[in-house]
Structure formats: C-alpha cells, structure tokens
View 1 (cartoon, rainbow, N blue to C red):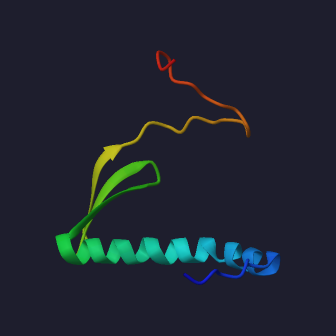
View 2: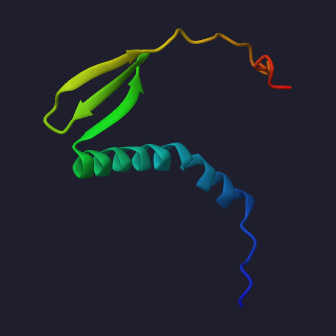
Length: 82
C-alpha cells in the first residue's frame, strides 16, 4: 500500500476554511433528497418544529422551549446523570 505524503499546514488550513461551505451544501442536498423521497421534511426553525412539504406548505408541529443562555466554557450537567 502506497503511503500518502503529509499534508502541509497551508493546505490543511485551506481545507478547514471550506468546512462551513461544504456543510451547508451537504445540508441542502440532504433536505432536497429527503423532500423528494418522502414528500416532507421535519426541522427546527426559529424555536419551532415544522413540517415542510414538497408542495411548499409548512405546518408548525411544536413550539420549542426558550434556549438556555450559557457563557463560553460553561459546562451544564443534567441532574441525576452522575
């Protein structure tokens, strides 16, 4: 088996910079595939769980509880989980 050459720091940084773009493309592609195969997609948007259908209709399934604000680096532990 042929060994690969180590990747340079510059190439690694360039590849890492593309992660958000690639993730967005993958998310859109998954959305379209699911919509095409099942006719509906369930997702969370703006504090609501919605069902979007391939005819363009949207139905709110559930209101989500408000987000819990946390400071950077804070670790939250669920009671009874330890």
